[in-house]
Image (cartoon, rainbow, N blue to C red; front, side, top):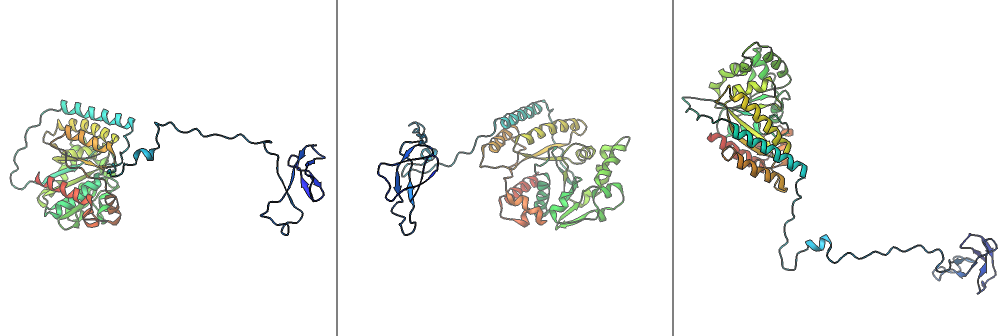
Length: 377
């Protein structure tokens, strides 16, 4: 039979049966015991093979003993498991990030100082005859839902029977994409005089028209800045003849601050500001208030009429807390929030408004409520 030393792996020819006193390796001179293969392997299957085992206690690895956890530190799943017959508590949302919370508080403090420093605005005069309302959807911060708000607000007002015009004052031209239309010309051509109102106004829906934006607005901005004087009123002078055709005009403004943004402020009479419920959006809102205060000195009739919180997610505490802070600062102008809804981001890809894409969704209900408030004035 063949035996293998467990220490140096040397092979040995031994008689059968093996000596009971063990074997001495001729290579490493260590003694080891030779035992047969276990009973699970028969001699017929593996003839002449023996199982060689290392002596007990030789070269054993150390054993790591796991210490039990302290009695006060119960496992999380045990601590959260309710008692029999007790109602389970809802999961606690995670706390907001400390840095984001400090930034949001700093922005709110800046907004509060600007509110305190703003002069009192005189009451608006009662409109005489037919007066077209011009509403600018504006904030210098991007990604807050300006185009979504402008398009769906205008669609809801049109469904209510109001003759509504959407003006896209953004070089991205996303309003036409959201409505699923492709006008050949729009705002830039109308202001520059290369297209008339009948050519530039595109009928997007019943009672809803569109003055499209796009890359052509870049040339219009250069035209405004090259004027020696009165450049800030270029838009108002070109669009004034359209007032007799519409009940409401909703202007979708681009993020940032340029000559076209100033023209919009000299054209509209009311401002609707979408504010995403997060720190960076509040900071952008604070900066926008400074620019608004500067323009208000030359246009005292311009009103910050509606503040619309967007992307309200009730599953976390941060947005809800910021909404409460805004409600304290603006109790009269703050509108019901627009809740976070995936359907609102899916609808533009289908070229539909939220009322066409998902009429029973929370987004449709929220924008219908906003339109009802705007219609009341």
